[in-house]
Amino acid sequence: MVSNVQPRGSHFIAGAYRSDIDGPEILSVYPATGEIIARLGAATAATVDDAVAAAVEAQRAWGRKSGTERGRVLRRAADLLRARNRALSELETLDTGKPISETLVADAASGADCLEYFGGLAASIAGEQVDLGHSFGYTRREPLGVVAAIGAWNYPIQIACWKAAPALACGNAVVFKPSEMTPLSALQLAEILIEAGLPPGVFNVVQGRGETGRRLVEHPDVAKVSLTGSVPTGRAVMAAAGAGIKSVTMELGGKSPLIVFADAELDNAVGGAMLGNFYSAGQICSNGTRVFVQRKVYDDFLTRLAKRTDAIRLGDPLDPETQMGPLISEAQRDKVMAHIATGKQDGARLLTGGDQPHLQGFERGSFVRPTVFADVQDGMRIAREEIFGPVMSVLVFDDEDEVVARANDTEFGLAAGVFTRDIQRAHRTIANLQAGTCWINAYNLTPVELPFGGVKRSGVGRENSRAAIEHYTRLKSVYVEMGDVDSPF
Image 1 (cartoon, rainbow, N blue to C red):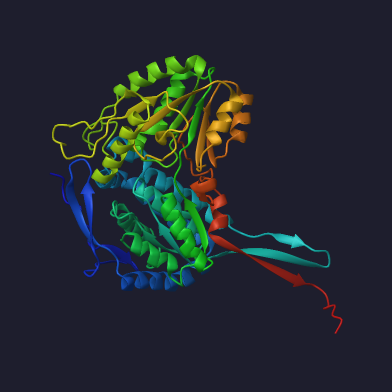
Image 2 (cartoon, rainbow, N blue to C red):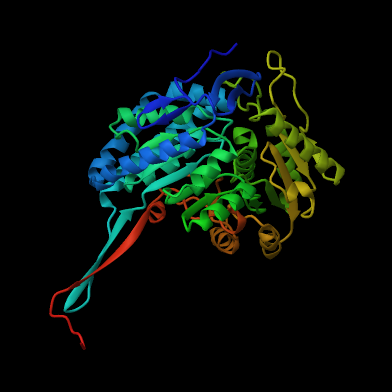
């Protein structure tokens, strides 16, 4: 049995926990065993209104603080996250099913990096002065107001930090809605921010499903919406935000290409492909799930890939030796297994995996063995649809122009990767790929110093780096006359 991690309340509003007995129940389930580890309630309309009202009130004073003052709070919060990384990582493992070997380095730790980065950047958020001859002008970067931030279940605390850090650094207040499947770590982040000195009401958490998100997006006092989610959710959010002419940034799905040229260091390319398909049990939006391998090294690549994939250790997510945990839920597992069945029906060659392992002590866990399909064709459904599970499609190609055209033949454009020793070809290929986040001889590394986001149906706007400041501030222009007014009247 897993110890109960029931929070003191479902929501965190104006610096305090709150429960909402009238909201539908939300269950946090440990995906490795199916155990219920916490019971929460979804926010009613009144609770959403209270959270937004608290944010509106708190933002006035927070937005008037200097960037240095705001940055100090964020840097303290980063230190607290790092100090409590073990406990936060264990909580994230219980809520998501991801192995502790991942959550220790990729979740709260990367959230702390983000808070630290924007904490250091806050004091430098400014406009510019423009010389106009006998007069001058200047611009001001001002906070938008209240940001509605909607998270996803694959990286709960990291996503919360990716949205909160730039928003708070710019002087905004935030109402954050975690995924209903992973509701716990955002509440811990809210506590830590208060302990770090954030005034009550500047960062609030409300739990709920799609209806809660819709209420937030449509709320008249919300100025900005930031979403991480699926393309269908993105369409709905953009339509709702558009009705209120609200600023929107969205990081959505992907079906990203990873291209391996014949001159690549093959073991590195195999490692990159595995990181881009099997980390977090494949539940990463930027995954390079279409792996294009040049014909000359195709068979060698598959041999090495199958051997290393078969060696992946599945098991207890709290065991530090475990390399892959379960999927987030039974529903997600069933969806992934349906895609695997589709791949077989469409004629792809199952190289390895493709089944549900039954692990002793974890018989109710939502596990799927890491799966590789070879000889995949561009038109197959496993090569067109986002699976969001540990399923890799390997396709063969002959030349650069061909693979670029095939890689771009998708509605998505989140990420792309290239493995080659030819640095000129690497830069040329990346320049021709329709993707917002790209890697050369690496995959799925997302340092906070670089912008992250996609093109086409993979989203709008960017998270992280200085680019995020543009999405959490409005620009005001001021003209200053130094002489008399020249008027014809």
